Image (tube, rainbow, N blue to C red):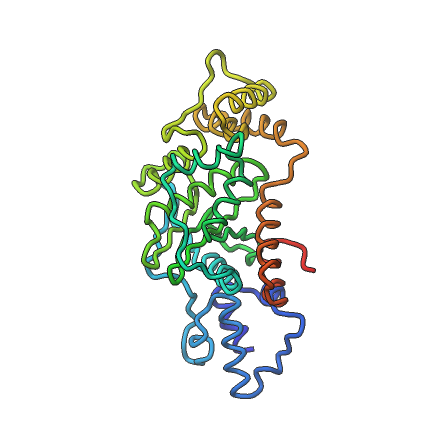
Length: 326
């Protein structure tokens, strides 16, 4: 009860705690002094809380988040408390790090232009699945975070390093197109050194029009990978387009310029301020395609199973990413 009470202080309800506990868990583990210490350690690792602050009855529970984290949010937005979501994301990443094969030297991340040239050698354009595969090939896991306590604010993206190992966490539930830019943006934070030396960038929102210098640089890096032009703004050559017209035009423009049609539609929507039209076009273009979240989950689970992850850890990660627990 004391341990659960401390977890509730940081924002984890009893229902949420139960949702992540392994099937074999028995509260009786904490009835002895050594068992209480073991329970503190396990729960701390699972929920991203410093175990010592759970074990010590007089200590206030402290979340495991980098002291050098930087919050990026749109001007005028109230800064939200994102520490719990960050701690859960990092807890999931550490479970992934446990099973990934160690690389003697992580593959160097190239300039945006060179990444684009490399990926276009075997692909018509850079889709979400293409970029996702590339990021994993660098030794950078990409994790989708969905299952967090109710009423907990979550970030749109998170890039960080833990013991020199980088990771990316994405949270958007928008089914097609948006995660492509989000992934490129978070990769940019890593490539540009924004998370070096244990730092962490927490993007409350990923805004293509942000004024912050680091965010602007990450946006330009991302856009250059996807389009070849760091300042690419796609506008109509004639009248403003409607949804079905934009869908057809995006496919043709994408084929000609080797840009994912979904990004063409979103770039157009952002540049023109016509998000409704862009969403209508995306719906038409993506018909029959798996969602980006499905692609992201399947890639992560495939990597984990290939590297023989522990069943308990796999169950936790499956719950956090919103996948069916098997």
